[in-house]
Image (cartoon, rainbow, N blue to C red; front, side):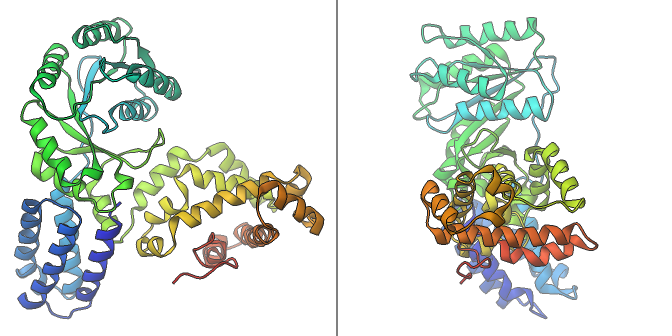
Length: 460
């Protein structure tokens, strides 16, 4: 997300960062470039106008001219204005109601409401420690109810049964009564998707809203529709009292126009953002962190939080203990580290959140790199347990067998073994004095295919 915008903005702002003095003329040229970058990112015109006006007003004032480093202050202003138009801070769900707190999900057909209900229920269960009940009032889409039931089972929350013969309002009333009797903390209600904001369907969801009086009414919208997402949310908000927006499929939106437009156009905060299809790929929306990523400054806080949630702590402690005792780093350990990285969304997702790595991700041919990491696991899986524990015994004939078993070439096996050796050396350094700094210096050699180092083609 934001790849194109990030590339344009970081390039444009780099030219102004080193300026000893900022004048209205050189600010004007930079702002023209910023304006074009935002419009190309499909940000709504009124939002672009307000953003540029806000930056210009602050940039040509005392704030910049009085600074010793005006170029850097200008970048800071751009960052702060980006944060402002996206909502200033994370807006949490308001669950401070007499249980069960009801959350109603609304949106157009195909926006990803049902999956979002499951993702949100997982967050509420695991992070907020809530007892969650989910129900589907979508009696129009074939298999919608079954889909939610399957997803609820996957994330381990309770599902309230319903069927296509029932009226939506009867379904939600029954679910609400059950939630009260069984002392659920939260009831999440999935509703039928609308192909457009038509009066009949809107009347139905208004009746649902009146019947259950939800504490949160979230509009789920596909980020890939760009500024249309903001306009649809606004139209929906005119007939339903929305409390927030959930942006889905943001990983497929290279422009980012929706994220930058929704808050300003609708007046409603973006509360969550979906960054992939996996059930754990729904994140709280933090405008400050996203602005930082847009400007190539990374998002270390989100990376740390993701690690806290997704890394298997028992395995991590066991591995760290093994390394500090100076034990051998095996191919099984190597495979486990790759799989832990995959749990974090893969190397590209991690690097995208690291400061200064945005452009590297661009140059690195992300798809090729991820494929390379997956291939390593396949090759390791084709080895015997003995070979994984002691790679030194892997002779030419064994390499040939491993290559055939994994559908790869002998040079791929050789490449893996070389990477493993480099990683083993690095792990040895980590277990000694000043280990972390030594490890960071050795990281370049561990880049997967397409990212330079480790015998692979260097970055261009």
